[in-house]
Length: 381
Image (cartoon, rainbow, N blue to C red; front, side, top):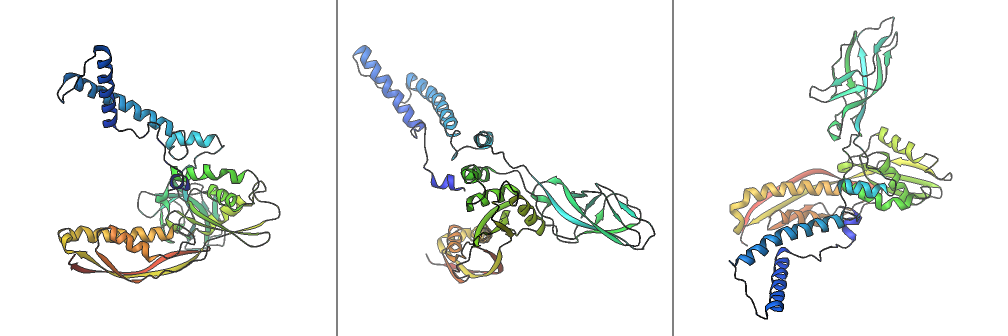
């Protein structure tokens, strides 16, 4: 949820009318007009043909009211979505960030030193054996007398599915390369992102006034940092000394950015059209503060028939909590929210030993460590 959807009031172009209210109003209007024309009162029973006709008309009229309400709301940032939001964003010169492909660095190796160069052509593809491929971004070659070369590579598909392949996972050469024996990725694949979602675009539209001058305000640095790459989900800006600006970024799901992504953000923020000449800007990944989960939860006797379902829901709740902790830089480690999610999953009570409430600095992100969750059984309500 963005600050816009959370903090701005709801509106209705039909005064929150319901289909029942619309039907009652139509009947009342009919009865009033009938008396005006005939001087007599009229009562419409549930099976009266005129009442049934009005009911059928009400459904069509109310559907038109819903369309009118929807169309009106699509003109407001709080409600706009899809193409409507794209057009609102266009009024401020903003376009939705498109999906991006993951990147990595590949190392190609040969067994024997040769007196000639071994070519690695542009577009050479590698994989880990699944249907996802990375291709080299440029021509490279293993020079005469050497046995290896590194070259940047990009996933052939856009989206997050290209992320998080650990070093060494991409080790199968798809193309036939004479002399080349092995290949492996040197860094974890990073930077893949799906097309920008509505909440992210809505937030950028709302904060774009911060960018009307150079990136002096922290809001402007936040905006331009997110603009640099679609995978960036949270930004914190600090000024430890006059003229010094430190920008901390994380990616979707609380993942820490790779060095190459930090450099990409740095290059973008240090553009002379963005950065004030007097600012020295540094881009960093936040520090990690690990927390452990150690708890026992119980289920009420009245819910014992659903014990299996509740246990599965509790496990999901813990995953949701861990993701929530990682979504924001500087978010305090909050066991109360963990208890809340477990209770919402159906538990009767929670005996939590760890984590304890911990205040984090704005350069730190909470990361889950060991998880020990025990089911204590059924208790009387």
